[in-house]
Image (cartoon, rainbow, N blue to C red; front, side, top):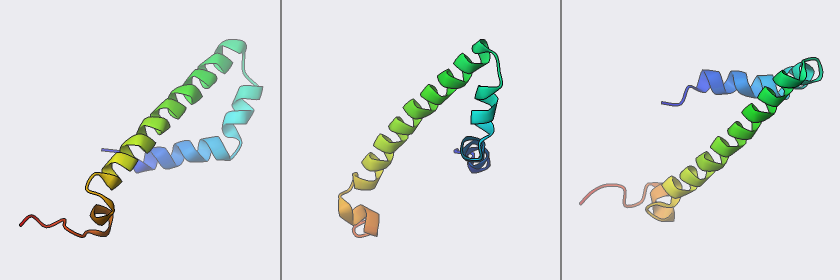
Length: 72
């Protein structure tokens, strides 16, 4: 299950300047860790986008609207 609370905290960390501040005020090793983490997050987001598209359009546009979702 996706932990929405964690995702909200992560979004806040990335958008409120905390990540940028940490990056600007840490040693080189920590900077590489931050960049590696951001790269991993972008990879995960790309997969999430692909999966969301697949799930939405799996049954055609009707699946999104709920048309034909009942088994006959």
